[in-house]
Length: 348
Image (cartoon, rainbow, N blue to C red; front, top):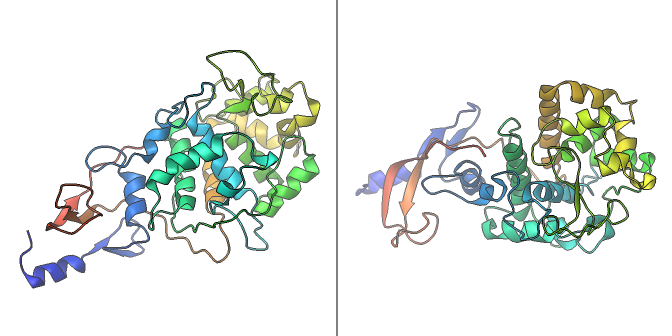
């Protein structure tokens, strides 16, 4: 325990070099400290519970309705939040505006309100809702890929408090419309194909929200009337690509009865089917493509927002103990120790 003024000064000025080797970490750093804890302290001593919502991949932490899973819905929330971005204008992106846009036809379903309802328990002045939406997608993909797709995370997203413009691509739109929408978001045709494949490897279409695409069924085990995109809806793998190439009829947005809403069919064939075939042939290529594209998706933010460097695990950090034994970031300090080694984290 530190008892001298000199020791306390030393504690407050403690500098720790992180593993990236590029920037010296100085405690405290309010831009990353809490985000680093949420990101890496996923179990054990002083754990944070955000990742538990999607572990395992088919978990239902936010809903009691069968036929839904949080992993797909957390991912969908992040994409729909980003999808109205205009990279040329420098507006939109991951900014939590989705919370004010749930009454739009392009944002049907309960996924957005219920995902945000789960995230709000972790929101604070040091963890914006926008950062939590990005973390939700990151945890979803990491869990469902069994750790094969780990997206580098940068913090610093800023929440807005009003709706942004509309413009989330919808299944009934033409290929030209989709191409233009993804270009506005900063993705070319090839990247559009990859991003859609990555997004549609988990989850499916809910008949309760889209009866024009999939039928509504009377099934207590599938109350949302979900029809999966592929045979492994809770596994972030290339099945969505392999089944498309083999002409499987499972994906309702590729081979559904409503030709107008076959958006995946149009998108996957936008380059003559070249990329989707490559993704079907190589699981590793699928994962690598998704890692790259999803990092770009999550880092799409308004031009005036400056993200942090990639947040690395901080191996050593001072500890402030709450008098009542509660959370160390609240209340007044009772005792201080120079070192509080963070436990080895477990990727979900």
